[in-house]
Image 1 (tube, rainbow, N blue to C red):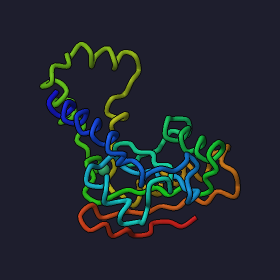
Image 2: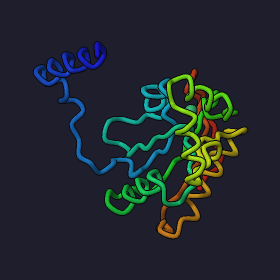
Image 3: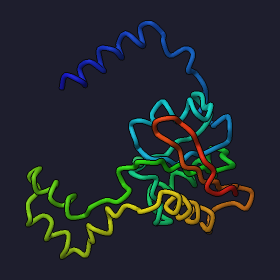
Image 4: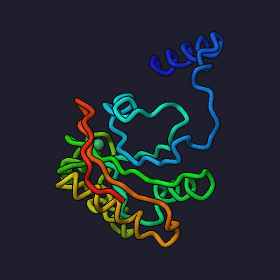
Length: 184
Ligand SMILES: [Zn+2]
């Protein structure tokens, strides 16, 4: 609770001091871009700084690993909303080195759940409902290949307008260096 309390205390001062003024903008992304990247905490400030992204420049969608495999999951829906409702014209998928989703160990993940009080019964119920937990939380071996796969799901989407370019990058979470994987 301490962290939340601190956040709310800070927030009250932030608003009172009108510290929001430099960040005011509208909801259409200035750079007409959607970025889909990992939830990695090392990238919260580093990625925008490294790619010269200011408040208001892009729509940003995140999940664990920047993994997109299902053409109608919430990530792809968000990308489509950004394009069809918010004027985005390009998509950039950005994976990163040293990602927690690379070389995921399903056995260790399951063990972690059990240690946090999730019952075997709950896991069995999932199994009987046809939910393949190992598949659901599967990571990747090569981040470049994973970015290519995510890019491919976007590029081949039947609801993606032909003018939308889809690119893939891999970023270094220590230095911010971005390497091109694929250019749309
Ligand atoms: Zn990651």
